[in-house]
Length: 184
Image (cartoon, rainbow, N blue to C red; front, side, top):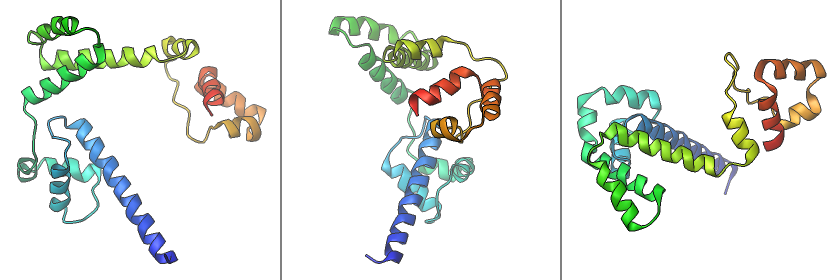
């Protein structure tokens, strides 16, 4: 394989990754669109082979012709998927699942979404260590921002001057700095 072929292959892989990221972000904000290959192919045909971006997909979704060409979920489809995910998360015996599923019909789709998000959060917290739980339970100070990507373990341990490190701790908090040191 020549250098040019390798570069073309890499460029195609990067484009595919950018398109996939844009498509999944689009699907996150538009739950009514089925996440299937047919819809992705329809979007690619709509853009006539041009690279998909989130901004272009959002703009195209305002066009009724594009929206009507996509396979959309009905509310009952979405409710079914949410209920299925909730039952998978709660586990337990079939009789316990039956008791929970009987309550589904009295809840709106939004309430079911909230229940699912709550169960997913509980499952996530159940897998955390004691230190991670403490960090999650500690309320963030108002005005504190997330650490920039440039603040890495290597930067903190090898390149940062004491004054720079003090400034980062003051701006972002010692908990955030310790988290970077722990997790790399």
